[in-house]
Image (cartoon, rainbow, N blue to C red; front, side, top):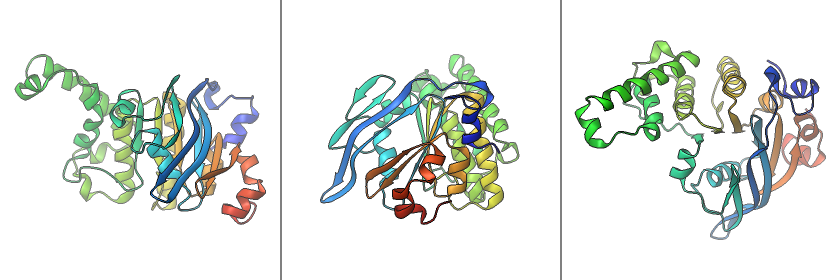
Amino acid sequence: MQSATARAERGEGQPAAGRKFGGEILKVDGISLSFGGVKALSDVSFSIREHEIFAIIGPNGAGKSSMLNVINGFYHPQQGTVTYKGVTRRDVDPHDAARNGIARTFQNIALFKGMSTLDNVMTGRILKMRRGILWQALYWGPAQREEIEHRAFVERIIDFLEIQAIRKTPVGRLPYGLQKRVELARALAMEPDLLLLDEPMAGMNVEEKEDMCRFILDVNEQFGTTIALIEHDMGVVMDISDRVVVLDYGRKIADGTPDVVRGDKAVIDAYLGVAH
């Protein structure tokens, strides 16, 4: 596995596979979010460039998941704005976020446990379907052709993530690591421009983490997908991220390359404990 630092050393702003970072795809500016008297986020600002892998780290309760929820519209901040693809808004609607290319996985797996892997991944294509409910109910003509096309796309995602053997298995019967991979497949089925991953490797063993790291790098490099992830495994963060932002008690305390963040005294005191 190739570190983000090693990739950066080949040229400023140049990730693996010879691709260059684009301009800002997302900017959060002065975001503050409170629940009653509890401040989840306080005046947080950062930007994410096209095609990069951007990590959000910090101790438990730092506001990391809250920030992802602001980005894709589950939470509406009291102050600040989110600019996505040049459009600035305070209140983002989750449906609009998904339609405009923001996909999300969750800290706690959110799959339809009684449905097969294939059917779960197919739900990621719903926003891409154009035929009305009547056509879908009849399952004839244009609706049938449309579903065949979407199913073919989903099968390519299943092949890409190497989950062919479980395509017909109800996801409730799958081990945790494979359920995480199915959830990633469903997000990829949306063809996102920005993929938000909330602790994609939580609860995984070493082998499962290695597989997930490989898939995240492949998604970024082969599809050109911009990725923002929350992760507690610092080895993973420092190895695959291009940039890192650190939150502590809802405030940003550091923002930079993995090497810069790893050596930041405020980060060491608040989170890392020792210089890694």
